[in-house]
Image 1 (tube, rainbow, N blue to C red):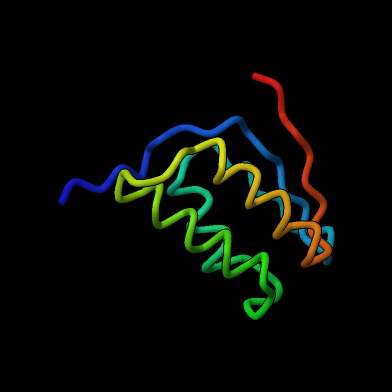
Image 2: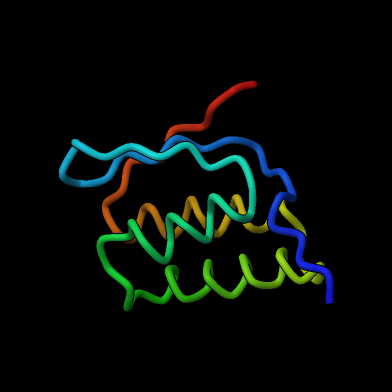
Length: 87
């Protein structure tokens, strides 16, 4: 199985609740790192959905646009500010 961790998504800048941490998400790998290592809460419905969509994108079964949408929903649920970045 070929992993597609560099599949691009439209960029999102995440500002975490402590306001000291920011992360720009541009790829499925960035999304996975944010969800698994930076996320303030790992028990929400939207968080779990975002993790699943992220895995689907990485293994080639998901659409990167859906990952971006899932990340935005999970951010809202967790109190993470999500800023749509224009590139």
